[in-house]
Length: 109
Figure (tube, one colour):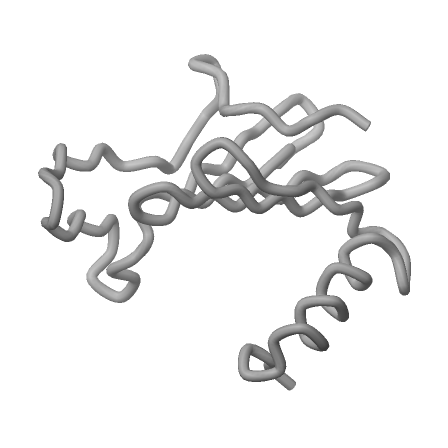
């Protein structure tokens, strides 16, 4: 399985530029309804949408890829995980169940 990558310069994107932020200052958001989201990019290819990349302030990233075997990636600075999201009781569901058991206060039902 290929690791998701950053959008290329040739990819069409809905990303809006964000002004630089100094330490201790909150980053401006692309939308007044989502203050913690720095950008949301839609990466398009020949077959349509290939991935959605959401950047959260300041060091967090979520990448959702499509295709025959979709994946969800979550990262913090230089580390994270990728889980396949195409079958019941697959990798993503197992990660969710692990987090739900380990951190019951974070559960959403």
